[in-house]
Structures are given as C-alpha cells and as structure tokens.
Length: 320
Length: 320
Image 1 (cartoon, one colour):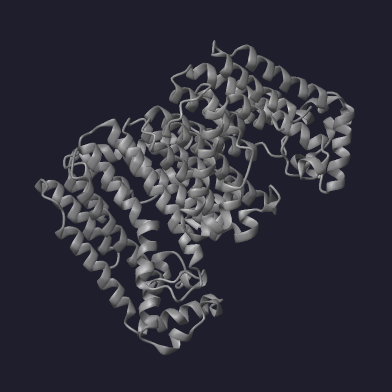
Image 2 (tube, each protein chain N blue to C red):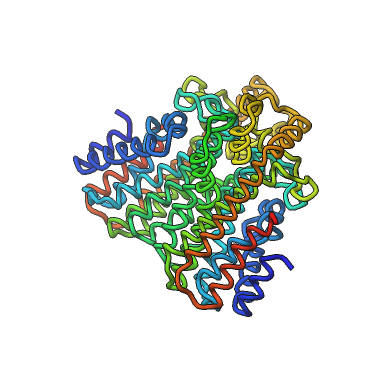
C-alpha cells in the first residue's frame, strides 16, 4: 500500500469519497474541452499521478473533511496547476514519456503542448472561482506566480555552480513547496482551520519532497526514477547534493557542469557526488524538514493530526 | 494621431491619468519579478503595444471612468494576459522580433520564454485578485480558458481547408474576441455598467479586429505588417480570405495548403486570393460587425458612447 493509499484509508470514507469526486472531475475536464485536450492531455490530467496535492487539500480541511463542492474544486484546481507545470516542463525538456505514457509534446508537438498547459492553468482558476472564495483564488494565484518565478530562477541559475544552499532552497520553495503550501492553505480555508500554520506545514514537506527528488536524481537507480542518473546535471540544474559535494571534493569544486555531456559523464559525476557522502547530508536535511513540519503542526483533531503525519512520512518514505 | 490617442483624448483627463497609471504599473511589474523578467520581458510588457485592451477596460467603466485602484488592476490584468499569449505565440512561431525588439524566445530561449509567459499569466490573476472582485476573476479566468482553447483549435485545424466560416469565426471568438469581451466586462463591472451588453460590444469588435488582421496577412504590404504576406498560409492557418476565395476559384479549392512552402509560394497564393475579391468580402464582414457593435450599444452617457464608437472605428481604421 502506498503512503497515499494509507492516508486515504486513515482519513476514512469521507476522504475516499472526496478523492473519488476529484478523480471524476478530472476525467470530466479531460474530455470537456474538445477533442485535442481529450486526445493528448487525458493521460496527464485524468490518468495520472499520485494525487498527493489534492489529498493534502482534503486532509488540511479536517478529518473527516467537509464534503463540499468548494473542497473538490480546490483540490482539482491545485492538481490542474500541477498538471500544467508538468506539461510545460515536458515541452522544455522534450521528454518522451511521463508516467509511462507519451507526453503531450511527444504526441502532439510543442504548439499543442504549450496551449494545453495554458488551458490546464486557466481551467484551474475557472474551477476555483466556482468555489466563490476570493481568499482561495488569492492563494492559487500567488502559488502559480511562485511556480513560474521558480522556473525562471532555475533557468537563470542553470550551469551556475556558485549557487549556494540558500538560493537553492529558495528555488525549491518557489518551484515546488509553494504549491504544497497552497494545497494546505486551500484546505484550511475551506475547512475553517489554521491557514498559516497548515501552509507552513505544506511548505516544509514540499521542500523535503524536492530535496529528496534531487537526491534520487543522483542516486537512481534509473529503473526506479524512470530517468537516467544525473538528468539534473545534464540540464545544468545545480542541486543540494552537488552543492554539498563541491564543498567536500576539490575536484568536483573545479568541475565545469557544462563539460558533463553524456549519460555516462553524468553517471560518473553522480558516483563522485555519492562518494562524498553528500546524499546523506541532503537526505538528513529533508528528514529534518519533515520532522519540523510534524512538530510544528497546530493543535488539531487526532484524525487530522494522524493523516497529516502520514503524508509527511510518505514524502520521506519515497526515499527510505 | 492614432485612434487610441484620439480615444484617450476624447475620454478626457481621467482616461489619460488612468492609462498613465496602467503604464506605470506595467513598468513596475516588469522590474518587480527578478532580473530575468526585467531583462527579457521588459520589451513585451513595459515598452509595448497600443494598450487597446486596457483602454477598453477604462472606457467601458464610464467616461469619465472612476479612477479606482480596481480599474487599474483590471486594465493591467487584461494586458498581462495579452502579453502572456504573445510571449507563448512567439515561442511557438520562433519569431525573432516583436514591435521591432527581440522576442523573449529569441533573446533568452524557449525555457525562459515559456516560464515568462506563465509568469505574466499568473501575475494577471494576482493583480486582479487585489481588486477583490470575484465576478472580475471569473471573467478573466473564462477569457483565459477561451484563449487557450482557441489556440488549441487553431492547432487542431491547421492545414485543414475544410474549415468553414462558422468554425473560423468560433476560433476568432475564442482566440481574440474573448479577451476584448473580457476587457469590456471588467470595465463594466468596475463602473457598475451593463456587463452583458458591453461584453457583446467587445466581442464584436474583437471579431472584426481578428478578421482584419487575417485580411492584412494576405494583403500586406510587409512594410506595414512587419511580416511576409501569407504567414498564416505558411503555418497552415486557414482564415476567412482563403475560405471565401476557395468558394470562388476552383484552382484554389483544389490547393493543398501544405504545398505552400516558401515566401514566394505564399505571396503568389495571396495574389490569387486577392484576385477573387475575397478580401473585400472579409473586410465587409468586419465592417458589418463594427457597425453592429456600435448600433447595439446600450444607452450610455454621451462621452462614453463617443469613446466606444471611436475605439470601434479605430479597429476598422487599421485597415482603411
């Protein structure tokens, strides 16, 4: 059983029903915007993903969560924004596969994929507006802005090995943790809970999630991650494992990331990063964030506390 | 004096002050999201364009318009969405120049340009949320969705010469007229005016605007349009002039648009389309739409009626 399944189970029937409604709504949206979207984006929005962010929306609203239309809309909106970023990321990376299926860009070209991402993004706002909550729209628009700023920051910092830990963490906050924060805030708004405290929880587990993702890029194995080791190195993305390793290995410190051109080069650099013990340092950082996220949870009902703790542990479990 | 300047003048000092505030806000936004946006998007969002859509927002709110923060935000939001679509369009077309300056994609590559478009788009919603009007956010989210659907429809219909007038007009409505409608609706919401009637006005002049743009693509001259004649033919976009010409010229009716590969091919096809009289038919259609837009304006103050009429005529004037 995956961590997500465990949370759904722990959350009880209301969470199960809500997640079913989210799934149903995602399927409706996949076929409700014309042939092209149905043909190419179906795999991304209807068939895909762990639905971690919608689950966060649900359980941040309470356990059992209120089974409102607004909560379903918020959960769907967050997942649509996530889907939009995936579709655009795949355009930029030219990725052939996602979740084992052809990406939109592979199946239909850059034009359709860029427009599909824009459509998912717009659809997210249209969906959330139906919940009639201006604070919710504010949360989603801020998160979307931060995602785009994180993407720009990543492009700006590409190949730049002088990027330090602080700047790396800020980039993670923008490109990943902001949407985890938004998921928790949207749930808290709908459930009448502690918006700022639950948002901070979301942000911390989002940071941990991204750090562990960056560790997995170095550690592999490819059979598990679905991509060759060192994909980040190959597109010039400087992550925590490399930053730490450079402080421990003079040869890595002198390495020009642009010189890494092949999958074999990247794998060799990954070995070298691993040999410094940097993965352990980065992993410990992620575990600390998860521990802090759990320890700073506000006072909640037992069921909600347990469910949020399970999600936090689930983020770590991906790695352990 | 351009039509836009004439409208600003007719609208009086309040319109001038509002448009100055819009300009100021656009400049702030261009420099307020980090170096990358300032470096590459400045030309698109700060220095550019006729500001036709923000002007529509202002005068749809009344003449003189209320000089509210909300109206400035709405005007800026519409222009940001417009800017986002331009940046993404340039990515897809690989355009080197816009408004005589390098495009974001030419200056900074696809990654930065895609993220920049996403950022402008998110920023539009963040800007509008500050106006604290859920109906306004609903209007913008619907328009954004329609823009993306229009873009998808254009991709779906590429090279397809069986596209008829109705489907062509629906595509124009989605990809162009929806944002003109939204501009008028946002102004009407802020000014307490007739939202549906002003929105319908906006949609009609938006349709006329797109039809005339498509006529200009065939008629040129390139010195005026800044692009070679027949650019639409070269990327497979079937527009009203071709649809009409095909019904009048059997050889054009048999033409496979994919066979048009060079600028010279495109220019020759443009000549042939022109020879059928199709441009006159398409232009007449646009003029009819403008006339209908003006004649169906609701009862308004004299100043507002005059200003909206000037904008409608300005759309036509581009062609005359």
